[in-house]
Length: 341
Image 1 (tube, rainbow, N blue to C red):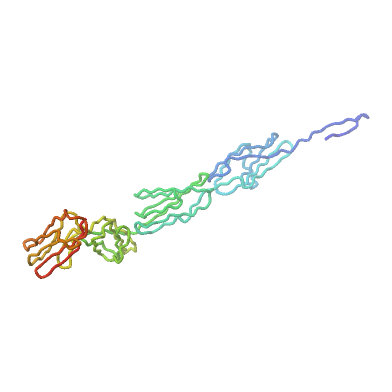
Image 2 (image 1 turned 45 degrees about the horizontal axis):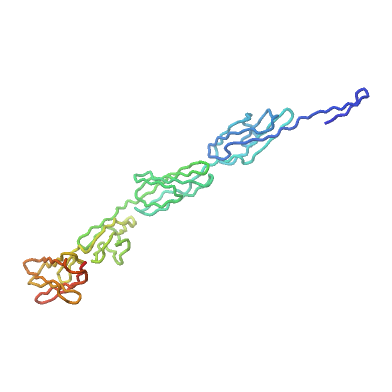
């Protein structure tokens, strides 16, 4: 400002310079992170500042006079930071609202579960807080190892165990929760084979399967295999815990079974490749065994007598196809279908 005044009749001009107000400014690093979060602040105010007052919570209480202070934020939330600076003649303040974000992910609804053995379970969790996207890590603390980074993996319950979910957000905040999966004390069923009959271990109800498909009407403790039903057998048992549990599968070939015919004769195996056994436990008189082709032409014959109840015929020379086995007794003739492989 110029001031005009008179001194002994002379006009004199004088210039008086007034000091300007300071300008407050600052930066911080980091501005987002998980609790407890240590933040370093750096003054970026005008050069004439000689006094700093930092209010890290903007609550009216100055916590530091250092131009480059650090502060630890212990509680998740948003924080407004205020810096007031002074020079010789004036002051200035700057507030950066919600400048610091302190966060931590929180895991909800990872509850304990009680399930049946080998139940298929979808593991899920609701996450609140933190900075998306989240990273997941599921792990079993039991004897059967399991680990997955899938947000919602599907598992088969195999044992009672403690599980843990660890969630990490995009700024590295991490939170873990433990939960328990309790498997009901069920026993995995088994079954045994006696000839063509399969018998399951005890249960409340049953369903037999062949090659992964439920066999219609096969809902009893035992199941009698048919000659053509070759493949993988298993049984699903409903136990007294209310659990439906599968047995292990067994690969069975019913053609190796001794098949009893309606009149007391047995021919096996059927289908046959090399040797056919014709058996009768109570043969009273000699009988003739005849094998004919599809046209009725005899291709093989043998005599069955009372001295032996088991007759073995070599059919390896026969071509593959369908044949008829005739058993000619004095007072009756029986005919059975035979498949030659």
